[in-house]
Length: 335
Image (cartoon, rainbow, N blue to C red; front, side, top):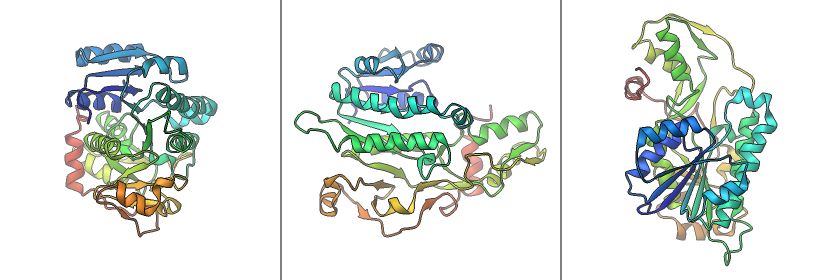
């Protein structure tokens, strides 16, 4: 699908952007444009990859004109740029609205102008029944992408917009595992919010497989959700204290805007959800093509979900202890 194609990745110097770039280069793409506003990260990434197919564009997704230039002749857009540090966003909410919501509409508009084939936005479980500003802005980003197809004139526009939604990438920057490892390496107590807190977990390779499959099978207006396992905070502590000495723990309590358990599909969305072998699809009830008979014609090996409870991190299968240890050891976080 991506062979000899031209790709744009917004926020391309982040952990996901770099991993996605590496995977796409292995798929013989023609060119990848990395769009971000951090020149130092671009310099580091350019040196790290040293591949003539990469183009580095400085810019901010708040600048629609710059985005239009960046999307010229592009086939596929991966929209990963966002403000995502929850405490900072709580203190500066309108900045998050400008970047995560209004600028996401800029991405949509630029894709339409440049006649991009498909554009996918990278969502989060924080967008489901959000408790904080970050989750609320990512929910609105999803809404913009999945409804963009509603008002397009098919005679003028052929771009297909879709969204993917998943949980924490194991070991990503800002996540709990690198923080715990740093504390243990410094012979400090682990700071735990609540031992019963659960989080969805997906490795970077699993996330890439999921994103690439979603954009391949997506017809437009869908939200795709992977079938993944979860872990409790106490599971992580037990795994890490088999690798490091145990220096105890401090219970600090759940912080404002945090949930005890995360949700990937709530019970309302379940009514519009469908199931593949390895992922779920939330359809857009406002879009005629999601009528049952049309869905069965357009998607292979799909069936309507018959469960109406939430798809949350406290009810899904937990990662076995030995598997969690293996994942942590293979994640390059211990160096």
